[in-house]
Length: 334
Image (cartoon, rainbow, N blue to C red):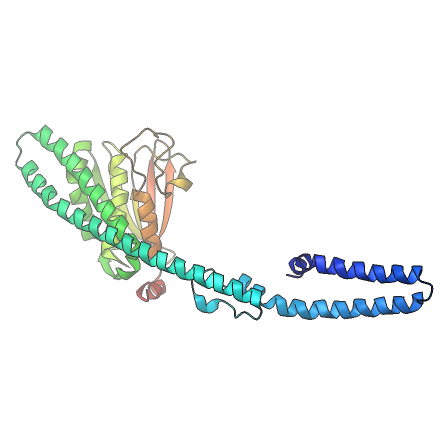
C-alpha cells in the first residue's frame, strides 16, 4: 500500500521538492540570505514533511486497506467506517451499489425459483402421458415395434429424469437424507428400468456384492448409478457389465465395469465437464454431455470420490469410493 500511496501523492511530493529547490536557489542568488541557514531550513522541512507523510499514510490508507481486505460479498456491515469526506463518498457509493445488487439478486432468485417450479410442474405433468404411453406399448404384439418404441420411451424417461435432478441439484443440501442403502435392491431397480434396452442390445449383468450396503442418500445415489449404467449400456454391445462392491483402505467401493468402446486418454480429464461429449465421436447428436456432469456435482455433495479407468476399444471402469463414517457428520449438519 506504500507504493500506491506515494504514487497518489507524487504531485504533492514534487511540489514540496520544487519549493525546497526554489528556496535554495533564492539563497544562492540573494547574497543577503545565508546559504547555511537555508540548508538547515530545507533539512528541517524535509524531516517534518517525512513525518507528516508517515502520519497521513497511516490515517489515509486505513480505510482503503480495510476495503481491500474485506470479503467479496454483499454484506454491508463489513464496509469500514469513513473518516474523511472523500471516504464517505466512496462508502455511500459502494453501499448504494450493494443495495441495488442485493435487490437485483433477490429479484433474479425469485424469477429462477419460479422458473424452476414451473419446469418441475411441467415434468410431473409430462410423466402422466408418458406412463399412459408405456401401458399402450406393453399391449403391442409386434415385438420389433414394441422394442423400438420402448427404447424411445426410455430415452424420453431418462432425459426427463435428468432434467428433474438438474433443477434440484442447487438445493441438494436441503434434500439429503443419509441412511443405510441396500446396494442389491438399488441396483436391481435400476437394471430393471433398463431391461428392454439391455435385451435389445444383448447386454447382461454380472453382479458380485461383497459390501451389501453403504451410508448415503438413496435417491441421489440411485441417480449416480443410473447414469453410470446408462453410459455402460449405451456404449456396449452384446457383452456383460460387471458390477462389484468391495472394501479398500477402510472405504466401501462400488465398481461398474463395461467392455464397450472406452474413452480416449485425452478425454478422461474432461468427461465430467458440462456439455462435453467426446472427441472421437463428436458427431453423435444423441449425447447431451450432462449425465456425468450432474453425476460429478451430486457425488461432491455426497462426499463420494469417482475413479475412472478406461482403455480405448476395451471398456471403461467407474469406481465409486464412499466416504468414511466420520465424514457423514459434515453432511448431516448441512
